[in-house]
Structure formats: structure tokens, C-alpha cells
Image (cartoon, rainbow, N blue to C red; front, side, top):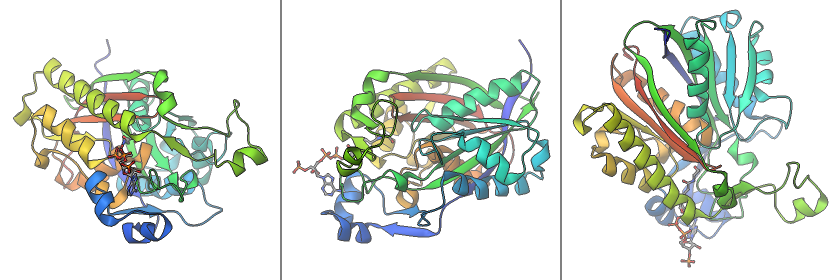
Amino acid sequence: MSNIKAAITGVGGYLPDYVLTNDELSKLVDTSDEWIMSRIGIKTRHIAKEQDKGTSDIAVPAIQELLQKTNTSPEEIDFLLCATVTPDHQFPATANIISDKLGIQNAFSFDLNAGCSGFLYAVETASHFVESGRYKKVIVVGAEKMSSIVDYSDRSTCPIFGDGAGAVLIEPTQEDVGIMDSMLQSDGSGRVYLHQKAGGSVMPASHETVENRLHFIYQEGQPVFRSAVSNMADTSVKMMRKHNIASDELDWLVPHQANMRIIEATAKRMGITREQVMINIQRYGNTTAATLPLCLWDYEKQLKKGDKMILATFGAGFTWGAIYMKWAYDGA
Ligand code: UT7
């Protein structure tokens, strides 16, 4: 086995300017700040208001910041992987569009859809390209314009989601840092609880699908909630045991930001305190494939080289999993 490891060596992020508050949502549907805060834990989310802008337009500024922070030029990038459930178009891949907009010309690129677990799946995928020794600079971006598939007349889903993007640079290292292990899983039978009914090959767009509002997120919250808690917690605990990481030895849990109650339940099962958990759901909501890199982006300054962290997700598919990582640089 090669002794090259793959490590995250920089983070960039971007959130659209417009901030959608719970009070504004309360004017659209029968809900309240009190209900949303107690059941989900979200105060605000960012929304891309411009009709003609897509997910690539949210990803581009996140990657621009990443390139600038890491002193990397677009020509140096070998491979760009975009995790999203809200691509600009059915085809071509949003990753191709992002690369074009940024002048990334010496790379191949494609999209990966694994629901809210997209970023984790993408980091795992990209890490093997880097570990092979053939690819030196790889970008993984999680980017979503969730507002393009949220039904703002459905109170059970519209408070949850937000738009945003987070991007990381992955490079080879021979030090004892980077991606140490992963446990990823999927179970397609969970699709009945969380999906978008129309717009794919099973139900192409028609007058009927539009009239019946079938191009929006469909979610049965409770079964998704139950599976999210058990699978995220089980996998994270399994990862801790496999690597003999005691609760007080873990520096960070980086959990998917779907619901504050899911995050708290996962942390409790792992026996860790709130100070060990990255949380920004209050401000950004659930940005699907962008939640994990946006957490890393928010907490970057607090991170130290060698910090032990577990990234854990659950999402549509169902898909879920955890990655164990040792942070590769001092954030400050
Ligand atoms: O990121 C992808 C993975 N997704 C998730 O992890 C989401 C997992 N699920 C959840 O986070 C929660 O199930 C939700 C936040 C979606 C819903 O919370 P819940 O505690 O499971 O509520 P519920 O669906 O059981 O609804 C409870 C009540 C219902 O009223 P009745 O039937 O008891 O009278 C709903 O109609 O709350 C009502 N309700 C609301 N009330 C005020 C649902 N949405 C709202 C709302 N405001 N926005």
C-alpha cells in the first residue's frame, strides 16, 4: 500500500447575501420562530434570490476564496468533484460549468449525488485519487441552491433548507495527518421517505407535474429523523471504537446540519460535549452537500494540526457514513 495520505489543506466558503428569517417564513406559511427553533434549531438561512443564477454561481466564489487562501492557481488543479442535489442542469455536470467559469483547464471534473452525504462521499472518492500518487491538487466542493427545489407553501420542509457552498483542497502528504478511515453506506429502500418526484426519467416534467407541485422536495420527517439519529450515531461510535478514540480524545465532531436534535442525539451517543461539536445550523439551515465544508470553514481558525475529527452525515438515498480525519494544518 502507498504511504501517501490525502489531506485537506484549505477551505473556502460562500453564502448568498439574502437572509431568510423565521419571521419572514411565518408570513408565508403557518409556522413560528418558536416552533422552528424548538423542533429544528434554525434561526436564519441564506437564499440566492437571482432567478438566472444556479448552484455553480454559489460554488464559484467559495472556490475562488479557497484558491486565494491556498495560493493556488486554477491551472494547477487536476480534478474537481462537485457534490450536489441541485445541479445547474440535468447535464452537463455542474462541476464542468464551475471549472469553465474559474478557468480550471487542466482538470477533469464531474458531479456526485449522494444527498446530504455528498460531500463525505466526494472526499472519500477524491482521497483515493490523491493517494494513488497521480493527482496532486484536487478540489471537492459541496454546493446547493436548495431554494430552487423548496416549496415555500409547505411548512414541513421550507424552514429547513438553505443555499450555500463550501470547498476544500485535497493534497498528498506523507505526514501522519489527513483522511485516516471511512465508513460509508447506502440503502435505497429509504428513497420513499425523501426524494423529488418529478423531473427525472421516471416522471419527466409535464404540465401535470408542475400543477401538482412534484418538482419540490418530498420528505416524511419522522422516519428520516429516526434513521438519521441511529445511523449517524452508530457509525460515529463504531469509528471511535475502531480507532480507540475515547470521548475526551476526540477534538471535533463535524455533523451534518439537518436538525439540532439529531446533532445533540449523535453527540450524546458519542459521549462528547457541545464544545467538541461544530454547529452552525442556526445561521445557515440545512445546505445539504454544503453543511460539512461550511462547518470546517466556520471553525477553521480554531483548528490545530493533528486535531482528531469525525465527520458524520445522513441524507437522501438513504446515504450515511463517517470519516475519521487528522487535521493537517493550524487554522490560525
Ligand atoms: O438532511 C436530510 C435529512 N433530513 C433530516 O434529517 C430531517 C429529519 N427530520 C426532521 O428533522 C423532523 O422530522 C422535521 C423537522 C422535518 C419535523 O419535525 P417533527 O418533530 O418530526 O414534526 P412532525 O413532522 O412530527 O410534525 C409535528 C407537528 C404536526 O402537527 P400535528 O399533526 O401534530 O398537528 C405538523 O403538522 O408539527 C406540525 N408542523 C409544523 N408546525 C409549525 C410541521 N411543520 C411545522 C412548522 N410549523 N414549520
